[in-house]
View 1: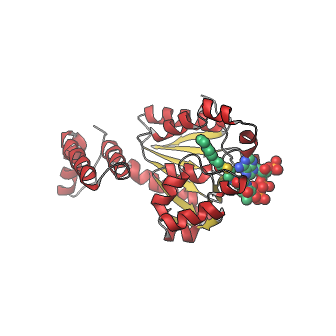
View 2: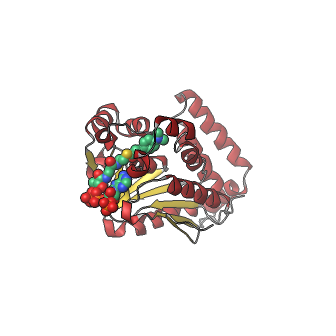
View 3: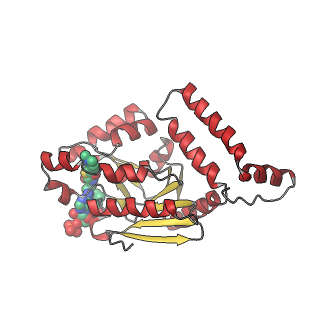
Length: 258
Ligand code: DAK
């Protein structure tokens, strides 16, 4: 498939998707989100891909939903098309781990997209924010819920109410990102992290993604039961046998996703 708003590549076992609307700081329009959903669907089906990196440019991961496109919509347009819903649900359906590599602005829908990934590595230039309040609207693809779960009510509420940006240091301190790296090293670091994940059993990485995500959806007791059942089920895989044998034989495991 040809993409106009993305650059899509596969490097060994890592799928790399780069948002590519430089003139609009990668603002998310319907075309971009449809292409992103499609690209993730293709990577989900491609057995070679074991981990995915989603990146933007050095200046902007994404500066939000496309204000020019949104400004022309009425309530009826938004409601009847269920704006962005099918696309974001398709993104969330991807079962392979997705790392957001964030440099520069991750604002509004851009911050929300980064938070939909499995974890965020950011550069020291990153700036996160939910500035929709400045446009007379609010977050619309999960920002009020996800940012609150990441950083707590007080900081999330302040960010949504004032529209202020959070820098990389604050984002790391608050638990929004897993790590900060120098801007020039961001892709190298994200790719090395993805390559490390790609060495693991894909059955185990998909299982752990489901288990951690379930912690947002259910009670502690149910979540722990879900984790335990997934753990038990991994004993039906060749990868579990290989991983434990390799440890005892003091060699590296060779996982085959079987
Ligand atoms: N949309 C469209 N174009 C944008 C854009 C955006 N979000 N952000 C930047 N651009 C464009 C600029 O208009 C400019 O285009 P030209 O004028 O050159 O044609 C170009 O990108 C470069 O931007 P600037 O000249 O402004 O660059 P600066 O370095 O001076 O400033 C900035 C960078 C990021 C601080 C500034 O561009 C900015 O404030 N951008 C807007 C940030 C923002 O407000 N983001 C939130 C958007 S609202 C929903 C789903 C999603 C959403 C809501 C509902 N539903 C499903 C219900 C999400 C809403 C949003 O994200």
